[in-house]
Length: 179
Image 1 (tube, rainbow, N blue to C red):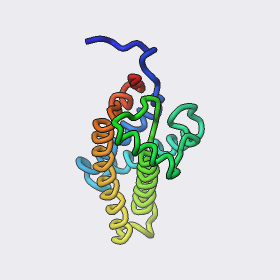
Image 2 (tube, rainbow, N blue to C red):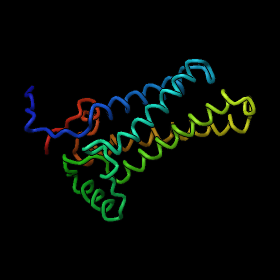
Image 3 (spheres, one colour):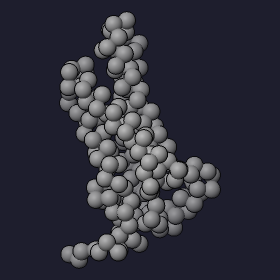
Image 4 (cartoon, helix red, strand yellow):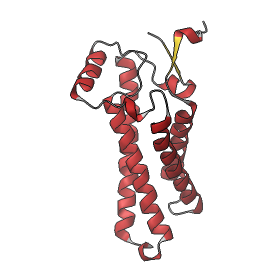
């Protein structure tokens, strides 16, 4: 196996973005599939997730690379350009999120904040303790987040394959091999 030098790689994701990403993966997995809803661990992991999301939002204004919110381009032109790259099977290696990827980032941020807010209201505000409507909203947020996760995973696999670009490795190492 040939090792790739740093000159043949481009840094895509800062370590903080990767840590937050995988922390949210772990927290969502634990809270959705493993822990009992409303348990102490479920609550603390939920608060940790919201804290991580807030940190990610702050980092979105500080980061000097692809994680900066200034790099967002949701224009029709940017979307068409991305779709053209996918169709041509050649997504440039020196890119961060595409327009659809950024929309997913915002959806995940909103859903985690919604989950944190409704969870906090149910557990910490006496007036809402046991409120079935709030519990249903919290459950809807969790289920929509689960659906978004499935779409995200499918999109990463498809885009990586079709666009001939590494998407998973850079979220682990922070670097992508240049095309």
